Image (tube, rainbow, N blue to C red; front, side):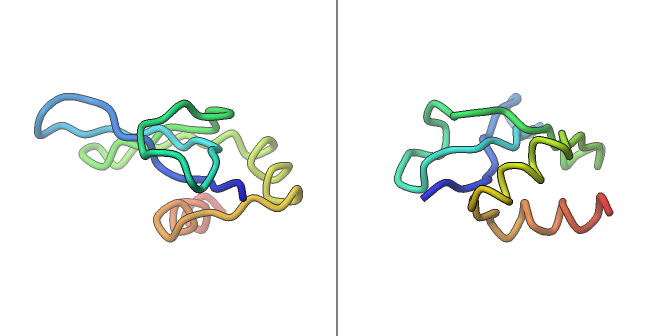
Length: 75
């Protein structure tokens, strides 16, 4: 099953995340199928590729709770 989830990056005590499409069985920082956005919790900035996310959701990908809340903030 495909999932939309966060992939952690950034420096110590300054996290940033990429919103990625990946297999549900893969590791958190494993190789993603596709990068779909960016989220920085420190500055509260985020970017989402809405067209690609809508396409992937229509194909059956499931977002995690955190990604779902970011999607709701976008609309």
